[in-house]
Amino acid sequence: MSSHQSNHISFGTDGFRGIIARDFTYDVVRKVAQGMSDYLSHKHPRADKPNIAIGYDRRFMSDLFARTMAEIISANGFSVTLSSTPLATPAVSLLTVKGYGIGVVVTASHNNHYYNGIKVKQNGRSAPPAVTAEIENYIAKAVPMKPNGAAIPVKDFRPAYTDYLNSKVQSSKVQAKLPRPVVIDFMYGVGAETAGTVFNSRNVIKIRERHDPLFGGISPEPVEKNLGELVAAVKKHKALFGVALDGDADRFALVSDKGQYMTPCQTAPLMLEYLLSKGQCKGKIVQAVSMGYLTKRIARAANLPFEETPVGFKYIAEKMLAGDVAFGVEESGGYAWKGNLPERDGALTALFVMEMAVKTGKTISALYSEIEKKYGKSCFIRRDFKIEKSIPNKHSFAVKIKKKLPKLLLGHKITETNTIDGLKIVLANDWWVLMRPSGTEPLLRTYAETDSQENTRKFLDLARKLVEPK
Image 1: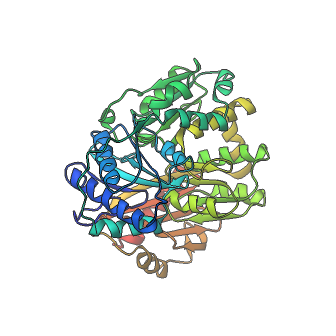
Image 2: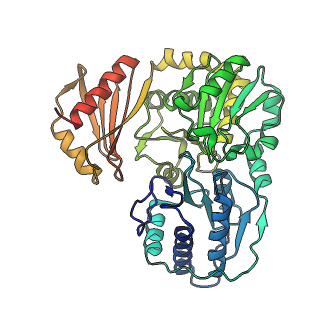
Image 3: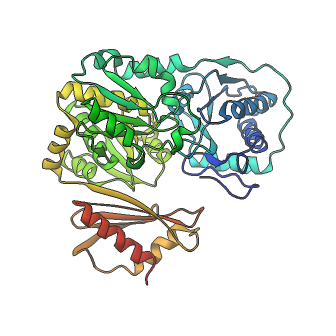
């Protein structure tokens, strides 16, 4: 994600991140702005320079960092418009298909409050790795221009985003038909900025929507350990379900009517099955290598092509732009489907799940038990652990471990080993484990899915032994 050497700025899975006042400073922001300007000037040497939209989240100083970026890019002769309010990341992606050639968001997404960062958007999604790699090279050599004092135009971009959401799901009609309340947890993030117009029904209960740059003392990441308040609110209000959006509102998490946190490996099949039932699912199913087997089984049953990508929504977005993709999903709570931008969007996913509940007339737990009956149980766990030293080369790490694998794991034959992003081992019964070194820090991320918590834990323990043989 972030780079610890102050002289090299790298755009990781999605954007550059750093600790405020250490890796993320005004000087760094100016350097990034200049590097981007140099890159764009090189790509557009004549008068056809792209217009640039700049948004920012609710973090400490995000608005000031965004203005600094705007001043440098403007000094380089580009037409820049700055958001007048904090803005959801998917809204900035939308602007890049509505007259802006490039979108920039000052955000550190789901990271702790002491981080900030920068994401670059293009063609309705995150700039692809080839583009960010070129921008990094320009940033390394950049010498920031002095701001020229020109006034920066400011605009409220929220109405354009609200119109887009309403054009995809008629939110007021769907919300009026909800049989029971739905709880939305904004985790103090930027999703709350459009909550008044998007989630404007009496049937919607909003929690943690006030502006708090400290995010209530947790990181605004919609994972189970951070969603105690949402689970409690779902139970208290006997809600139909609960949803949570992350700090920049592109990720989504679901809590069932029973107050059960649904992993993305359980949420994705619910959405996919509903899309299939609507007859809206023609094309390939694409998911990150850290995702589960239920979506794979549904694709198999529906005779749909299926493909896995490295971790990072930008890889799914590329597939969506390049070919006929019906549904794309990543393990950290990013969902996209045909007919929308090739971008994850927390608010849109929340509206989609409301529509699913209204149209099927069933609770999340009832819909999910149907999935389990048809396709089997999913118990997914992710566990990160510290290792002695960081592993810079994921591929050689994967190859080394692959060489020493036994024929059987947990009593099942290994049928597949995938090395596109770390090492994923798939067994004959679809159970799998993925080992992904961080690359930037001495950390190994492990993910596994089997039919029970006990088996999944066993699989994760086994993975750790494979990495650290005692």
